[in-house]
Length: 334
Image (tube, rainbow, N blue to C red):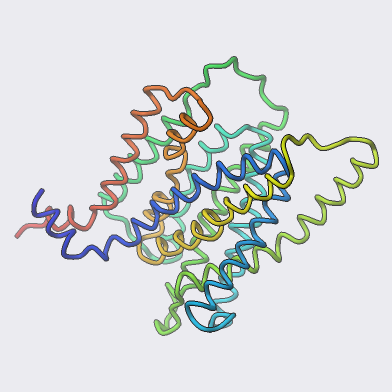
């Protein structure tokens, strides 16, 4: 144990990617709470577009302060990969996930989204040639098992009848999961991983900015269709189901944009830059566990013993991923 701690203390920078992955999960936890409350006030699609506008502004100003320029000094190939990443992960993936929430509900949708580390590990192996050690595979398995155990728990209330769009919801949730992993893969390639010229490596913050800009552009057609449908519904006398103040909704969406699309996506790219794709995506997928104390104390929901034990199992898998390098060094013969 002392040898492990000494190794960690000497080479703490080796765990920056793992730390960023956990920070991403904390950011997604905050943004889910903010956006859930905001969506009830101004609608999910409006929240989705508004968060991207704010994220582009925040990322652009941050990039200017950090690098002294408004647009990153990137190659055409990098911009292409990052543009595809924004469209795949943040536009298509998030819209599919929001629709799956309606078809399936948050519990089953969240469970299906925990498959994203598996997609990421396969994508990283096929495209980037990343090989996971047995410790990484075990850590990913344990973490996914803990998360799945938590989100599979049946609610105490009477189960609702199955939605007629159940199959579509499952397909959309799996599409969202694959898009999240694919978006992270494209981001990693856009930052320079897998490219022949190592000089083209891009900072994760700059990559986040480019990704957000193209995600916002891709959101334009989605928002146009949404507004067209809303106008038709209002003309037919069908009013949207909203609760609370719209001003409060935009304020909550602002808070969610800061911790999610701004800081959360930034940290997710740091994780992808510093850790294997499968490990990074696993550590970015802990929000179903991290949200438990918040719903217990903020929403007064009952948190069962099974949920707590599942959280400990997931954290145990995270510990295996964080200390992978030290464990490997200890396992090697002297």
